Image (cartoon, rainbow, N blue to C red; front, side, top):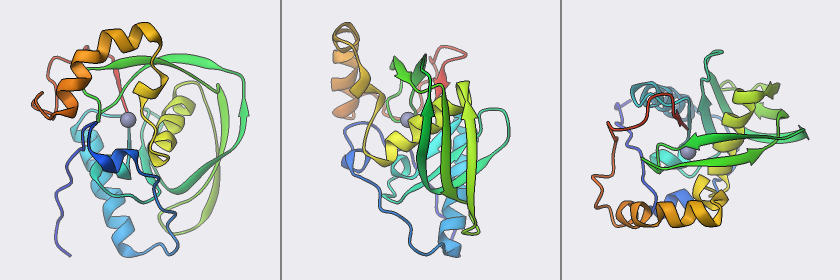
Length: 181
Ligand code: ZN
């Protein structure tokens, strides 16, 4: 199998706004994509990555928020509890961070890379990362949560990113500690 080099898609790319397809049969290709996604996530110092962010409109995510690597297929939130708001960044919206209000605790059902069903309970940061990645599968981005003031602050930056004039890719100037999802 050829080693496919994945590339992170930047806001303005239509694939980021598409709803990802459910994976019907988990094939070796899916396992390969998931492991390449994990590699790219670590290389980019991210803690989560969804398939649409690498141009693949299929329901797959990888997450490692410091408690181990999850590779999930068709993840779905089946239960929510409480709320929290964390400042989030996104590898597809470099240089922008938005405080997003999300559920504090969630229960997820998904398939693992061997098509085995599993349930994951997550809270705090891990819960936030899962919700961010599952948003990507619905074509939703952090900018959709922007307040009026946020919108004003990020307007120029977004225009540049959407026109591909911002060098697009990684931003070395990222504030340390900012969550890249
Ligand atoms: Zn993201």
